[in-house]
Length: 275
Image 1 (cartoon, one colour):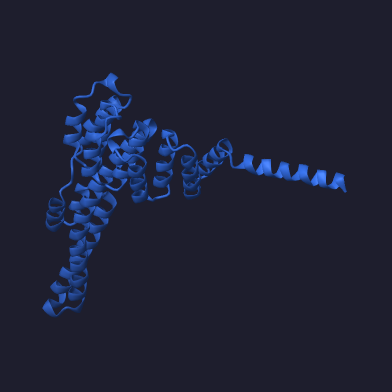
Image 2: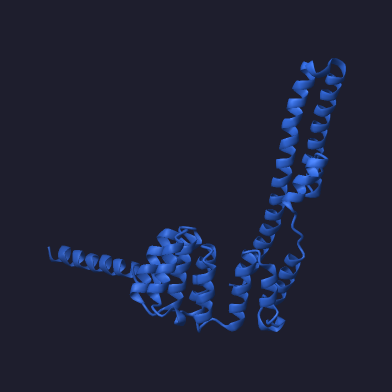
């Protein structure tokens, strides 16, 4: 009986010590990192919240928590939690400030972001320049981005050279005028598409509108204004003609959008490669 009680006591202590070990700081941190790496960001958020409860002054944990909120798509929560963790956001640590800035940029809160960069004392000046230039490029303000980057020397920041090159290239991008594309296709169907480098649809528009017009004229030439064939082909041709004009306008807008998106993607890759 004594041996049985002794065995149960030892077993209880073992289970209790194992349970305590499972939830200690080191194991909890490993588990949080595992959840993060496996893309389980919402669960990782809970683990980092618990870790911060254990070590409330750990800036690294705070940065990771803000990152998990952002990665799980909870941008408002990330910003709110950032202000809670750092009541004086001017003193927010540099890594956390960069993570906080990511959420601001994703929410397109550019004005708030600019105010934050001005007041924060922990971000380096070169980092502030890069963040400000990123904000301007995301808004397609390439001239402003170039002006901001002009104060930055290549040796001041790892991204300085690449950012300057990209911003200069972006400034050279020539936008296509939707109005001009529409006017061109109004005069000669399909040419508005050629203007926006949409060659395939331009040829199709020119062919169909031209074919319908030819068949309509041919019908009217043979049977006069009472030609059923002439009116049918004329009506269909008019539809293609109007669609060709509208399509050219849309094509110009899409061309500009794609050009800007390419720049945004490249700046995003550069940004993520450093921060």
